[in-house]
Amino acid sequence: MQSNGTEEDLSNATVQMPGGQPGHNVAALVLGILLILFIICGNLLVCLSVCMERALKTTTNYFIVSLAVADLLLAILVLPLYVYSEFQGGVWSLSTVLCDALMTMDVMLCTASIFNLCAISVDRFIAVSVPLNYNRRQIDLRQIILISTTWIFAFAVASPVIFGLNNVPNRDPTSCRLEDNNYIIYSSICSFFIPCPVMLVLYCAMFQGLKRWEEARKAKLRSSMCAGNRTLYCPSPLFERNHMDIRLEERNLYNHSECSLPKGYMMNNGIQTVSYPHLKYTHPGHKQKQAKINGRERKAMKVLPVVVGVFLFCWTPFFVVHITGAICTTCTIPTKVTSIVTWLGYVNSALNPIIYTIFNAEFRNFFRKVLHFFC
Image 1 (cartoon, rainbow, N blue to C red):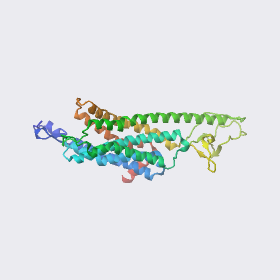
Image 2 (cartoon, rainbow, N blue to C red; image 1 turned 30 degrees about the vertical axis):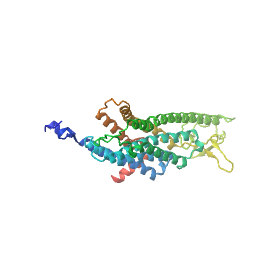
Image 3 (cartoon, rainbow, N blue to C red; image 1 turned 60 degrees about the vertical axis):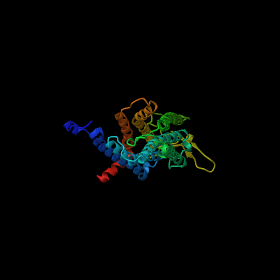
Image 4 (tube, one colour; image 1 turned 120 degrees about the vertical axis):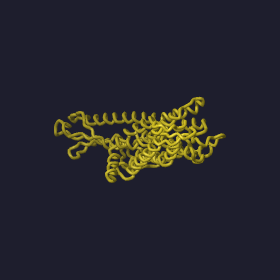
C-alpha cells in the first residue's frame, strides 16, 4: 500500500515503497546487528575460556566449544545475510547461488548444534555407565570421533541444498527458502525430531544412573564406617564432594580416642578423608585405577539440562511451524509467525554463554577477568 506521508506512516519500522513493495525494516537491522555482536562476543569468550583456563579443560567443555563454534559460524555466515533479507522486507535481492549457500549453512549449523548436544548426552551417559573406562583428564579418540561425527552428519543432512535441490522449475528469485517440501520433512526429522528424544532419554538414564551410584556409594561408606568391633559413632556427615572423596568433620566422629581408623581413612589437616577401594580395579603390572566423577563434572552435568531445555524452548516452535508448512500444503502460515519463530531460534545462539556464566563459576570468573581487562 502506498504511503500517504502521515506521521503514523513515518513512525513505522518498515518503510513501504511505491507499488506496495516492502522497503527497509530498520528494526530488523538494528536488532540483527546487536544479536550478531552478542553471539560473536559471548561464544568467542566461551572458546577462549576453555583454551586458556586449566580448570575448564574438561571433556564436557570440549563439546561445549564445538557447540560454541557452531553458534559463531551461524553469526558470521548466516545471520548477516538473513538480517539483510529482513532489512529488505523479506525480499531476496541477491543471487540464487548465494541463497542456496545460505540455506545450506543454516541447515548444517542448526543441525550441528543439535547433534553436538546429542553427542554431549552420549558422552555423559558413557561417563556414568562405564566410569572406569572413561578418560576425564584429556580428550581421547572417543570424544574426537563423536565431535567429528556431529559435523559430518550435519553436512550430510544439509548438502542436498548446495548440490541443486533448490533448483526447481518456476523458482521465485525474490524469495530465499527451501523449495522442496519432501526435503523439509526429511531434514526436520533428521535434525530435530529424532535426535531430541534420543538426547532426552540418554539424559534421563544418565541422571538415574548417577543417582543410584551416589546412593550405593553413601551406603558403602556408612557400612564401612560402622563395621567390625570398633565403637564408632556415625552422625549425619557433612559432605564435601570432590574427586569422589567424602570428607567428614573430625568433631563427633568417634566417641573415644582408642577407636582405630578403618582401612582407607587418612588424616589431612584435621579432616578425615575416605577413599573407596570397592570402586578400584587392578590389572597385572598396573596401578590401581579409581572411578571418579569430580566436582567440575557434576557442575557440568547440572548445567547441561538447562542448555538443552533452553535449546528446545527456542527451536521447537520453528521446527513445528517448518514441518507443518511442508506437510499441510494448503495451510497458510503468516509470514510474521515464520519470522518470529526463526528469530527465536537464532536467539538461542546468544543464550548459551549467559547460561554458562550463571551456572558455572569458572566461566563466570574468566568472563569477569576479560571484561575488567577491556573496561
